[in-house]
Image 1 (spheres, rainbow, N blue to C red):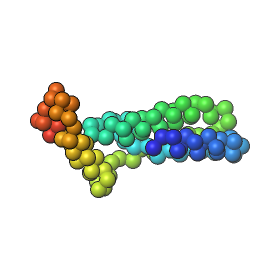
Image 2: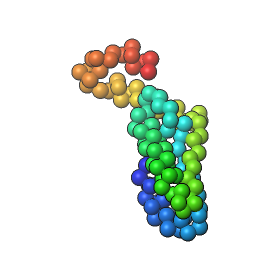
Image 3: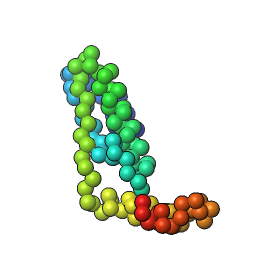
Image 4: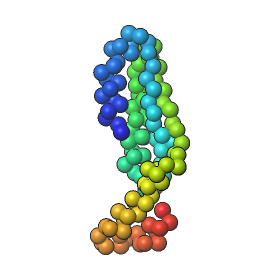
Length: 109
């Protein structure tokens, strides 16, 4: 979710600079609004947002524009499975890991 766009942009930078092109990264609303149950995804989107912000400043001298598209969460089976998968992982965790949280907390998250 993070390394592939960075590697692609790196490979294309000479052409982007020559053409005064544009980098368009598709991130997510989760890139700036973190919600529970999908921490790894949120972290990857935050990273791509930060990379894009830095790259935007670095590319100004060459006239290369850098933008992010931040679509909202869509009600797809994948998106709806994040919470279910997280809760399943919680329930399967060792009792010692769950002890400080409790099942009531997990159901509310």
